[in-house]
Length: 487
Image (cartoon, rainbow, N blue to C red; front, side, top):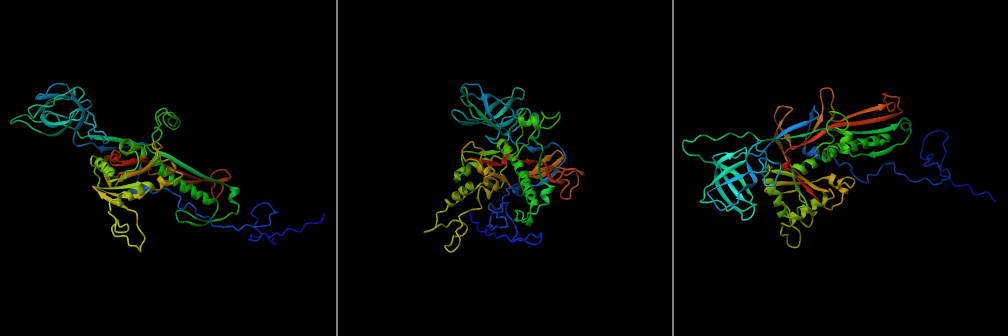
């Protein structure tokens, strides 16, 4: 058998141990005669991969030194009772009405519920409007006598000749609009206390870590990178540390958005809450989505795509704080739906689209989007990357019941609440983060290095560990002014 031709290796060995382009081996297959063309710069195929920034736009951060954060929000100023009943019978000059629940919700379906200071707030001499909400609807005005806060009953003396003819099962809504007394009479019976609603939340501890062994740190392996925060250069193991930091930054925000309190007796409660140690606080926290879903307003069954749909939202906002300016953080489809809704209000120009502040000229780029609109209130639209990211909520199915969120309406500005820590009223953004801190310990964003590699000398571990920690909670003030848009 003849000797085969020598393989044509392109590698050129050097006389000294100097790393050059000609003596670089990409793998340990020394029979490979072809060197691949390589790009030393990492290609950013997903663009900016971070999804945080929402809370930085709409909120603020401030310290707290307690395991529990408590605040009070104002209740309703006026009183309305629903599902009020009275005995069946023919029309009469008076009727005795019973308030089934002195803490009935006066907002007509809105939230939060009104609490009338542990007793019925209707008093003798007050004038009321009584509206029948079932059966044959009608409205009557009356002056109150015989109000009894113990039995939650009051007698309505009608201003008309007779009141309603009542049948079994009739329900009424009652609200106070004033009072009327005779000359020389005594003053109003009793008084009403301010109605405050107390809320609380607890911070959670969020951690992450990046580790690299000392041996790997000694290996030459550089990659030129361009990162989301603008940093560039040649990094190797610190690139992974940097991405761990970016990932941790995202988790600081998404944890505040998605956190839920653990149900007592649940697995999370047994692991992290009262089941884990005596005296420990409950597991979990109240994130933005949880609070708005339970104490705010929810629009379900698809996106609002017409002005009539938005009119129902505006009608609900009228019953709440009536905040003048609101920002809707939306996913891409919701953004398109709003654009299409607003474009439909334009009659279009002859032979082309003309909606917008100025006519879209044929020689300029056609702008098919809107940044906001006014209808009763100002609404500004902003894309929310978290709802679009396929590795986060953007990857959830669009079917009803999937848990997908299409948007969140956030009121702009701040509100006044009673801060129990400060012991006084304070202005706070509707959304803000409280982090644990004291004079000696700041847990807003802690990072430290342990191990024996990379300059650290804290233990015998032959590695460098970069640790991250934060302890924080989000406070959603005035949740009744928020709107959550579900699939």
